Each structure stands twice: as structure tokens, then as C-alpha cells.
Length: 192
Image 1 (cartoon, one colour):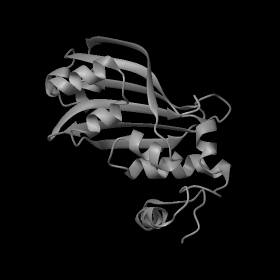
Image 2 (cartoon, helix red, strand yellow):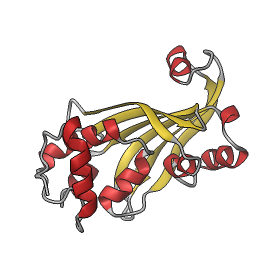
Image 3 (cartoon, one colour):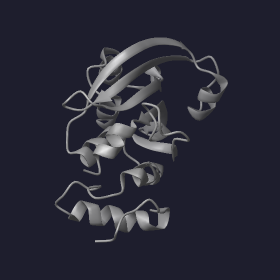
Image 4 (cartoon, one colour):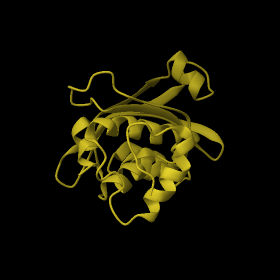
């Protein structure tokens, strides 16, 4: 099995992921905790499925969603561009937390979605907030496009490990923008 460290690159990603899946242990066990944010950022840059599934796989637990705030409003110019629609288009949004079985916060999340591009069940599920968006949109076969991730510049805050964002597409249409800030404590727990 290849040695994983803080310098996993895009060219090493495919082999490293195959080795992780073939192993019978938690994938990042033994990795230097200081290097984990770089590894997570490299994986997230190339991970096509919603982030919830990846974090559940890496931590070997089911994550739950806690909505802190939600609402609706018009899309900004930048968000409209990423979602291939007009600025001012009506959208829904929510901020929340992904938490582990013991209440540990895995990630602070933000989701902006276009209700008109989603089936009724997905809209209702996102509005209810009972499940993580990655689970709901994953049922539609959503994939992450226009992906960006990086280790946070400062590591001392509660969300100091990795920040990522991506456009989620389903059925060939951009339906949402997801942003995650993976907490340092959660990232470090993946190495134990």
C-alpha cells in the first residue's frame, strides 16, 4: 500500500484511493494529523460525488445534519454564473452542521439551490433539513463539478482544516452550490 502523507498529488490520487478501498482499516489511520488537511483538500479537488458520503466513508460513521438558518432570496451575479442562470433568480439557501454520532462537528455547511431545477421530493427534503444535502442530492445522481478545495490558511479556528466548494449537477443541469468547512478536530480524528 502506498505511503500516504501530506504530499498526495493529483497524479497519485487514483492509486492512493484504490489502495485505501482495498485496505480493511479506516483510510487515513496513521497519517500525520498536520498533513491531513492537505490530503483531504487533494481528495476533495477530485471527488465527484457529494462530500457527505466521503466524510462518512473516511470516518466510518453516519453523519447527521443540523440546519442553523435557512431562507430564500435572489442569486448573486457570481452564484448565478456558476449555476448557469440569470442574476436575481429565486433560490433557497441553508447553513448548517454535519455532526458525528457523538455530536462532534465534522463540517460547517452552506447550500444554495434552485428549487425549479429539482423534483418535488428533493425540494421538500432540502427544505425540511432532516438529512444532509449530499444524501438528498446523491439520490438524484448529483455530481460535484467546478470543484475547489484547499487547506485553510489558519488552523487555530473551529473550521481550520479544509474549505471546499462545488457546483452540484443532476440530470445535466446545475442545481446547487455546496460549501463545506471541515473542522480541524474532525480532520484529525480521521488519523486515529
